[in-house]
Length: 84
Length: 401
Image (cartoon, rainbow over all chains, first blue to last red; front, side, top):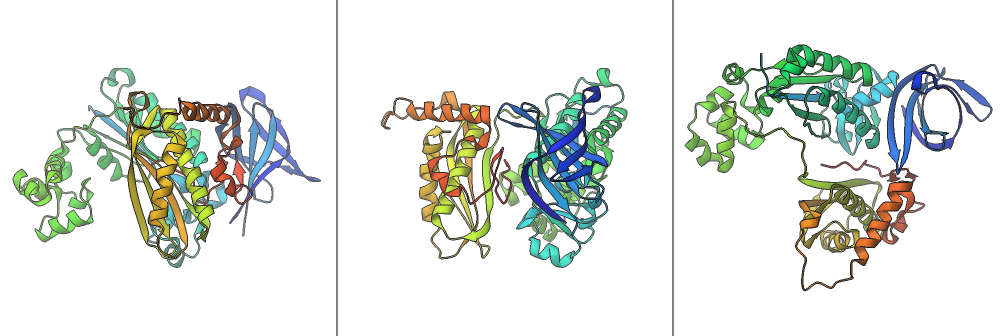
């Protein structure tokens, strides 16, 4: 298992229904990756900004950690966990 | 049944969070740590792995183990969610890294049967976080923790005041809090192997053997623990420690890291409204030798320059061998309320400039995040270490002890 720490802006399609955020897909380069499952979600803070984290499994089985900055409404990939 | 204290322990905490984040890790031996095991999954424990074991030995014993560096802020976020569920059952939580105690006095009329409520707490934590916790209920802190420990992982154990003596008497003496390897050996030489046998020894004998600690052992052997459960207002110490990404002998890198760690520890103190009376510096050489030294802070301080100056002197005195360092850390002890500190009449007065400067920097970090400002002495780390919203990404996440 290999963890790549990143801090990469990313476009995310998300569902904001019911007062919760659920990432549905992310676009990395030319590739669109469907989110199969949100394994975990947690929140943190950077100064006054609230950051929401999501650990998401994509079809390859890899786990992408996405971060939503609720203040700026921007998404970043903070890490990818790869098999091998 | 009536219980006074709730104890909640998160099972294999760091490793369990990693297994929740990545389902591929479930059922596999998982280690979180750097240099030594900070936490390992129950699958890893079946191979004899334990917290504190060097990673080299862990890899030899369990080559299939997945080793992860871990990420302290993530673990803190999960712990806070678990503690929030515990606080709904018992107010006035006394929280630690992966466990907490709650005072149940007077809550029965509110919650009804404490065992049913504890089962609901476990279910709520699992549904919300995916983590399992072991819950213990007892008449005091010690018995609540021991009751839960017998049922780990994912257990629920309880002891009533009436059952305490019977519960303790057959337990191995090593399970009693305060009986470490040295005391255990001394007691084994006297053929004392169970808590019941220890309880039969007169108080005077234990005091003669172990000094003041013998008094505490006597009380505990009889199931007595008078420590109150309440939210801690003043921690015992605040420490920040890290391993280097690669062992180093570069004094600029080491002092820059020490300065950064001292700044983080000071900021935690200021957030708590505290000042330290003592600063301790710890270094770990690449060959496994550890050294530590401490110096008083007069007057007590939580200001970065006032803490870093003696810390740097301690480091320069400690690092006497021509061996690379593996880790460095700073510990601030003897914590007192910052506004009650005794001023030093003979010390030079900068008219509060340092305090205002540090306060201004805190304001910037509060607004823009910890990585927004870097002190001059830590500039050496810029470009060498990655930065996240929490500051520099250290090899070992900084955790308060």
